[in-house]
Image (cartoon, rainbow, N blue to C red):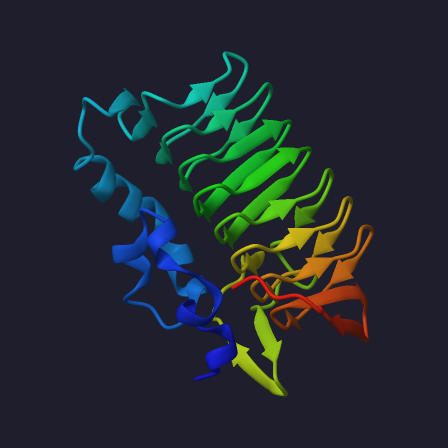
Length: 226
């Protein structure tokens, strides 16, 4: 086991309704094959006075705002106080937490967004998990399939961890900031409180509390936000 990549190292599970699902796992990407199934099980337990069921497998908090032009395909849960804005495309298997922003022309597919995540402008987030208060700048995306279609391997701390997954985008720890127009390549893991410069192409593991400037140049941040 590589502890740098563990669920407990990357996330505070008090900030997601998915905690009972995730706390049983070693690595966060182990959740990806079962997100849709778990949403369906959880959705049936949501209190109807708090969540409106808009389709067989679509549950939307009554305090959430979903623009008429947004598209929701189940299984999906939209949490309290979240905004799903104009032209958003939620393709299914999406668990969106409380106080999130899913913005203009943003596409979500097979994802878990912790509370207060912002993907506000022209983002693609697929087969990924975004931690509490993480933010993706305009135009930044997760690339979730390797060009040769081989299985994704995560490289961190001098080790390689097999995922067994063909589709796996990125894992962002709590409080991560991704700069505009950046690409997170398959199997990218960004540790808590780290920042990625705009126009970056990121691959592999970015340690917590770091600033990713470019490949091979990662600086330690002077301040730390746990």
